[in-house]
Length: 299
Ligand SMILES: Nc1ncnc2c1ncn2[C@@H]1O[C@H](COP(=O)(O)OP(=O)(O)O)[C@@H](O)[C@H]1O
Ligand SMILES: [Mg+2]
Image 1 (cartoon, helix red, strand yellow):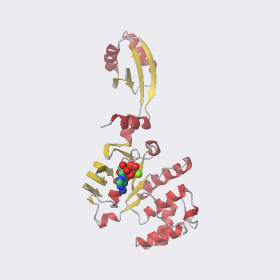
Image 2: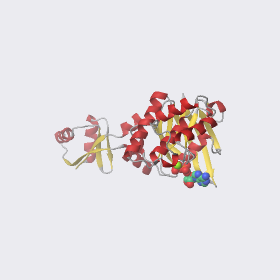
Image 3: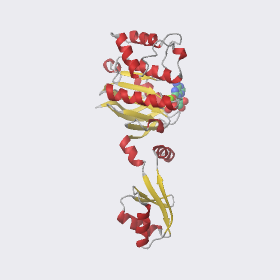
Image 4: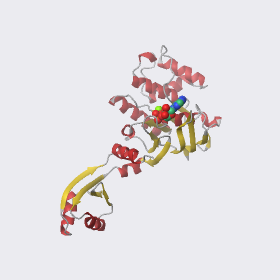
């Protein structure tokens, strides 16, 4: 089953599409990295899912049901923009007010549960205004976790955090899915931030979903290749294809994928009568792959 299934979703502001015929599929239990540059439509999509905005067109299903269905709405927790906390009140008091709003019964117990998840059980009495950015982000997540949502929607929660803050945030997100079985949709304009934790990716550009893929598929595109030149590129290409599964010509070089031994390739070509004039071993990282993707899909 899918936690989120969106078909042909559109939303415009003053005649400009922020979200344009977008499709999205978020499997239950996934950490879905929703990646796109600033202004590509991530927040708008999330606000539409949360019912904060009304779509122009399209269909949104959450756990197989229409997103407006009250029974399904209560299963969604979200942190979009800021947590809406009272600065002069303590973390505990802020969570208590939210718990009352949500009609949660065992409030004290529930607050302790969410504070533990965000690793703030020892900070409950600190005033919100005294908290660091990283702490505020975590309080926002704690707020969104009240009532044990099955789906958590987080808008750029890693944005602006330092390295330690990012690490804690990643650990928390993995915990939420692993120990509490919650599905997490998390947006970011930096792919690398989510590289270690996302199980799925959706890449949005100018309001359109240009690609959805699993982390495994993404991994397989980020891999080792050897690029080389010879005096007879065409001939060498066909010889390489006889021996190696994945060979192609790109940017004036022959690329041989997934072969560790550069010498083996040179040796093989030499025996077939081709002299290698230039050779280099490369690795495409995820970030590079993403940048390449963003620049190539220009419409
Ligand atoms: N309330 C609004 N009124 C007018 N334009 C908006 C509004 N919200 C978003 N936009 C525009 O929609 C586009 C997508 O914005 P947004 O969803 O915030 O992108 P992202 O979150 O990916 O940075 C941007 O061009 C933005 O200026
Ligand atoms: Mg945004």
